[in-house]
Image (cartoon, rainbow, N blue to C red):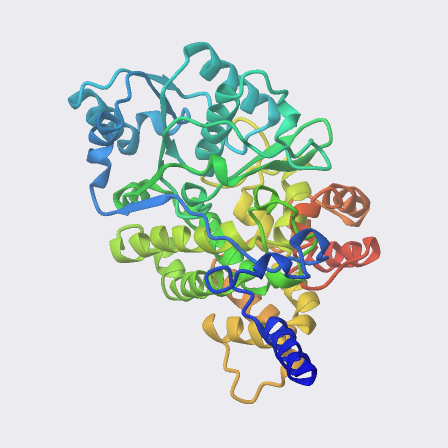
Length: 465
């Protein structure tokens, strides 16, 4: 009888060890030996994206949306160039028709700074709006994100929510006001993301705010708004889409990113490549390959421009959850340290390296460098962009993608490297110093990099062709 009891006890112990740990099926799941806080790398990813509405002429619905939200006092943000163009007029007509009370803020700076963000924030705090509408490209949408955030958290210091190590990188826990983004460029994908980028003038680098909480409530994608874009704006916006897709697809896998958050609210917006972001990034890359050259060369090609508008959103969904890495991390000092370069087709009163251009100029060097970590993905990207890889060797993936990118950029008349926009080898130490604080993105590179390797990448990017 004692032997029988021992056998029963042994059997119960075996069953307990084999028990399902799933909360839905087991009463013992709380005994699971591994807790997120004890892990060094993450084990999960999260998809966050704004609601998206797409269609020609869909902007006319924005007034009805605000009415449905019960908005009583709305802030409309744009810039001086756009305020006289059809996209803004269409929004204001819809608001007027639906009897929405609004105030316009048109002092958004193209390539915003900490000061231009704070100016918009001051305006938003003073007026106490209950909803926001941004009409413009990434500069306008990002400025509106910041205004909504800090007006909703009026006691916060500006650096509280700015990414570490420049700011404190605090989690956003306050409720924000409804926010509708109406993008007028096909590039940033800002209508889908919780990212707001600006130049921090004191350090002459770009940084930003990254939180799912600040993403727009609704992104209203109306392809008619892309028809007013000049050639170089189309090209540079498209290069941003290109690099968003490439960097998201080749980013460090989410299970390799550290640290693992002890609380899900601390899981970053940029989490590393993951199965869902991969789908959006590759799809966006295919659209870029098919339509970007057409959109640049033929302003009246509605099909091409409409598809690039969608590609911008698709890539935004991809990188907004996977992240970007070295092209973007290195681009921030390229934009922030600009000397006298003024890009064609940009009506601004200050030197300007457009964001998409600053990103793409380093892309051949970057993907040559990162390819050894995930060569199959680099080779796949090269094939999507037009390379014949039938006889390609996997060890040559980086060189093949780099050559494919150079040809793509040459065909679209891109400046011949960093030297062509005013930089020299003497500037490399400053460019590296400006890249080092961008850990939020550079750590997502599939290949870690030293300061010496960053210097070599900038040097390799001085000339493209």
